[in-house]
Structure formats: structure tokens, C-alpha cells
Amino acid sequence: MEIQEFIERQLGLWPAAAERFRALEGVETKTVEMPCGTTYRVQFNPSRAVSTRAKVDAATIAARPCFLCARNRPPEQLSMPWEDLEILVNPFPIFPGHLTIAARDHQPQTLRGRVDQMKRLSRELPGYTIFFNGAKAGASAPDHFHFQAVPSRFMHVGGPYESYKLTGEGAETVDEMINAVCTDGVLTVIPRRRHRPECYDQIGVSPASIDLCGTLIAVSCEDFDALTGERVEQILREVTEQEPQLYVGLTGDATEFQTDAEGIHTVAGVRIGDGFHWQRDETFRYGGKMMKFNGRLVNRIGLEEYLKSVISSEMSATSSIELLKAHTVISRSWVLAQMRATRVRACAGIPVNEKEGADLLQWFDRDDHEGFDVCSDDHCQRYQGITRQTSPLVAQAVDATRGLVLTTADGRIADARFSKCCGGAFELFENCWEPRHHSYLEAGPDAPEGSPLPDLTGEEEARRWILSAPPAYCNCEDSEVLAQVLNDFDRETTPDFYRWEVAYGVDELSDLIRRRSGIDFGRIDALEPVRRGLSGRIYQLRIRGSKKEMIVGKELIIRRWLSESHLRSSAFVVDRQDDKFILHGAGWGHGVGLCQIGAAMMAAQGFNYQEILRHYFPNTTL
Picture 1: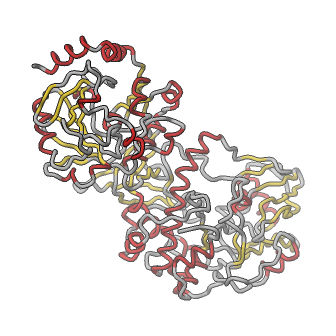
Picture 2: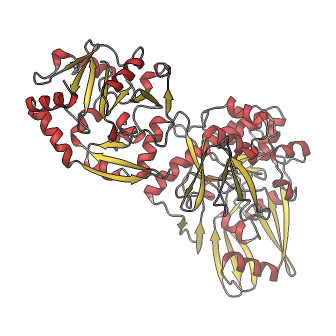
Picture 3: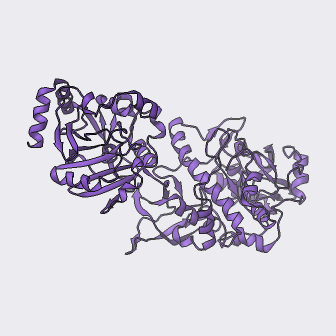
């Protein structure tokens, strides 16, 4: 009997199934565009709730009768024998012609010993694609072996995940966590990382082979409306990728790339040090996949390969192994936390401007990255492709900590921050970014446990602290240690990191602030700290001029307005001498989280990377 004749005979005898097949003609669908640049089909099919919402835990499976065993099937359901299988019409179809091909005997859903059978079946059902859902990869009957099949025109392998065409038996190794698709004897395997996406309790999608091959199934109207292109891509990536894949937006005006025979992309005009005095455009080489989004080049790269470049770019690739391990863990933690924060923030609409008794209180963090996860410059983490993968030691550090992140008490990935030099004390997160306290980003001394830290929120103690040079890990003059942290770009800056001094004439400062802020304060009369954090960093500063007076913050705005590029930090005191403003400062950067120079000194003193992480990120678990 021809398969189409079998389907027609079955639907003629089973009115309920026939009605669900007829309903497919009016099923609602939409096409969404994913950030990776491809489109995806979303289908609203409430009848599939029986599969999507199915409980597949061991207790539920053991308690219910198996609906694929002949004795438990409806009397209307016909079967067509083929080898040791039975071809059935699926009574809850996704597409016309949807079939289930089940084993006659009750046996587990495993592909072992059946790869060649799957290929034979695909050849004997021309025009059909055979697929297999692993027991933990979308199978609603994980206790009874079965294939499924739909007309090939509905199946398209390809998406934001890796798939593998196999000629041998490679699909049989981890088949609980795979989806396999076979057309005309060509077998493609899609490895799975997890059964269901994180959003399953809110958006009830449970991806199986069909969902991964071009059509994601929603079983409620609310879920259908919520499935945007970004959400679809996120779901597919969550359930399929063994290693997180990042989309890195390249900074600068680079819009073209050349790809060689080995798949390496060369890009000229990539901006580094954007807004800093070492700003320049350079040529870098990248692995992974290169694409364009809204005119910007975006590099898709695996997380661990990304880290090898970041660690070499953020510091010298000849750094000590313990420092490299510590930095790898926090860089991995930070980027994964940012990927989630970007998505949450996009939904929550958290503002970047706040009013706390200031005329301008603004913080900058993740507000300008649309279409990619992170950028390639200091705004995120320095990423310069394979050009910066310069040391076997970096690869060793990344491999040794593969997959390790810092987590909080409630199991979330820590938003692990770092800066070049904290100046002897680290700062609270909320004094630099959004007003949210993180218990693992506390303020404290960059010194051995038990060392005192004065109250640097007051002007008297802050002045005494900044004008002195108290002992601290980052109070370092060891050129070998500094060389571990500072790469070529950093060494172009004066070596005064722990304590520094900048002087401006009044007219020079007035012109600088006018140009950098876009506000004409007139002739600057005074710079007055209004609020300092626990590290002495100013996060609200009053600027008094002959034309205007204004309180501004947070720390990055202050650093931008008081320098042609960026002032090293906002931990400074101001002296007025005749026609000059002299700023005496401490540290380089925001001072939150890990202090790179301090961590380098700790490693040089024999601390391992776990001890370094505990020092800078209390209340976390590795």
C-alpha cells in the first residue's frame, strides 16, 4: 500500500484524527527574523499541548500506559508493518502527512543499532524526512522506541546551532541528548545541551526535531505572541549548544572582511581604545563566523575561544598562570552574566538616568548593544580575535578552568567586574552603575584579610588616604609584575597607577569641561565632591562655574569630563593653587571587583587563583 493511501484510509476511519489534520489548514503561523540573520517559522498549534506539556519524569512514565503499545492504542488506529516497526498516522499532527514509526515491542528510545535502519527507512519513504527525538531531547514517549516522519518540504536543518552529518554510527554515543534527522539516507545529528529551555515555565515550548528544523511550535496564543526572533534564537541556543556561542560586535568603522581558505577572517579598521588617548584602528584576524548586523561586523565565536583572545588582550599573555586562571573565571562569569542581563534589561526597561539630588546622574553599562552580546573594546572586554591568542599559557589557563564561573548564594552567575588598579580599596557596584547591591561586589581594602580601611566617604579621611601611599597589593613597583598585566597599549600610559597627579590651568579646565560635556559652565571656580564611595571614589561632583553650577555623576561621567580621554579614576582630591587646579588621584578604573595589578601581585606572592577570587569576590562559589 502507498503511504498516502494508508493515511487517507486511516483518516477515513478515525474522525478525531481527521479533524485535527483538517485543522492544519487554518493553523496560525508567522515568520520571525533572528539576530543571527536567518528567519524562523513559528506555528500556533494548541493540539500539540499533549506533547509539549507532557511530563516525562520517570514516575509519570511508569504510572501511565504506553500509548505506542498496540494494546493501549485506540481501536481506530491502523498500523502498517515495516521490519520490526509499525507505521502509524500521528493523531496530533504538526504537518500534513505526519507519521509515527514505532517498535512493535516496548523498548527504550535509543538509536543504538538503528542508524542503518533509519537510513533505509528514509530511502523507502521518498519525499519524507525521518527524525528521532532522544529520550531527553523532546521525545514525549521516552519509554517506547519510535521514529517520526513528515514530508521533507517542511524540514530544514540549519540554525544557530551546530549539526553534524554522519556516515557511521556516531549518533549512537549520546542518543538520549540528540535529535537526528535523515533524508534520502543522509543522517544529520544535532547534539543537545538540555531538554527544555529556561523559559519553559513561562513560554511552554519544548523543542524537538521539528522545532530545530525550521518550525517552533507554540501551544498557547500568549506563547505564540511572545516568540520574537530574539527569543526563538535564545531558546534554540539554550537547548542545543554544548558551549555558549557569543556574538561580538567589532568596534570602529570596519564593514568589510576577507576570508581565506582556512576560514580565517581578516578585518581592517577595527577600533581599539575608543575614546582613550591610545585610540587607533588596526587590522585583526578572527576565527568563527563573520556576519553583518545593521552595518556592523559581528563575529560569532565559541565562549572558550573568545576567552583565549580576551585574556591575552586584557593583559600580557606572559602573566603568571594563577593570575590568568583567575582572570579567565571572572571574564567567563562576566560575559555570561551580561548576556542574561542584556535580555532581562531589554524587557525591564531599566533607565540609565536617575535623579538622586543631582542635575545629571548617569551610568553606562549595557545600553548600546543591539544585535550582539558584547563589543570588542574596553567598554566590554578587549577582544582582538586570534591575533591576540599569543601564549600557550593562556590556552592552558582557559582549558584548566573550562566551564568554571563564580556563582552567588542563589545560584546565579556573578556579574564579575574588574579594573586595572583599585588604588588600595575596591568600590561598591551601585556607586558606579545601577542602584542595585551585589553581596559579592563589596568595598574593602586590597590588602591581607583583617587590614583596616578608613571611612573614605568623608573628605578628611579621603584626602589623607589619597595623598599617602598605604600598603596594598596593587601598591606595586615591581616591573616584572606590572609587565604581566600591562600590554602594549597600557604601557603607553604613565606608570603612575597607584597614585597620580593631573594639573589644569583654569582656562584649560573650563574649555575642557565645555568641550567634553557640551555645557558652558563659564570660567570654572570650583570642583567639589558631594558624595564619595567607600573606596574614596567620587560619584557625585559639584562643578561651579561663572555661568552655571551643576552636580554630575556617576564616576564615568566625571572621568570623561575631566580628561581629554578618561581620567584614571574618580578617586581624587582637588587643590587650587592660584590659576591652577591640581587633581591628586588613586587607582586606574572604577575599582569594582578584581584589581588586575593587585591580583598579579597576589599571584607573585604565591596565592592560587581560588584565593585571589575569594579576596576580590566574597560570598561566591566557584
